[in-house]
Length: 351
Image (tube, rainbow, N blue to C red):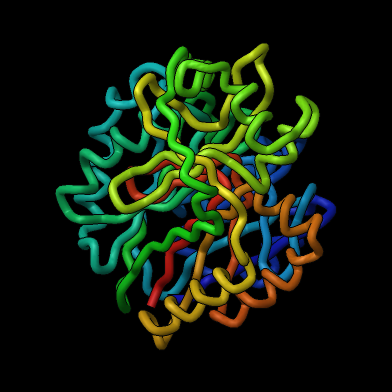
């Protein structure tokens, strides 16, 4: 298979589509003012080709912040695209669509992946999708778009998750997740006074969450939102850690980008040597896939901000370009199989 990436910093879709011929699956990454226009225009250019889209920044060797990016797979891909609607309260209502699409595309965990763009309620959505994927061992990568909108096959949806089931007809696929944080000290917290619907973390070990965070890191209220780049929370999930970013201060509580439940066990994390970790990820991919036809990734907005502030973003994209054809989305949350994480990178590699 082959991966195409086209972009226009000024939001010209025709410019972004130059050189794209006979795509078999398309991902549209647009801006909030032109998204709906681009969705309709893309369908006119390639009617009937499975496509999904969302509002967000894209990248290859550079970042498209306000324009439009198009990622497409060609030459040896079988794909189907669709949506699950009403994700805020009942994503399972439309699960038969996914069951039919997985059946139509065929494949297994060895050669098939699901890529999704979600408008919200990510953790519930991933649990729902996983009820279908786990039967075939199919992996998932994806992320959250902006403005609560996604698209599939030429239509715009709100309160939905758009997905593409993609089968590599010429080789394997494998998903990866990169974590650039490790545990800080021996702090362990039991969460309480949480609001699952609003992602509120009220107390840690019985004390106000805001005060606990401030006392440990010696920061002011105003510094909390930038300090989460260096010191997010982490939730232990087996032998893995799910990163939980702080969104804002809410009285004496903290609002997060990921749901926290009463009795969850949390730890505090600190930023590691991200350049060394990135290089290890690249080396691991190269060991697993000596020949690579495409890499599609989702990088968290907070990683983008962190890397940009530290002058590493362009070097990061150059490093990832060593894998071959690499492109991706800057997301507001990252999906890895049935897990919803923050401040991470997830990707799928095609042989």
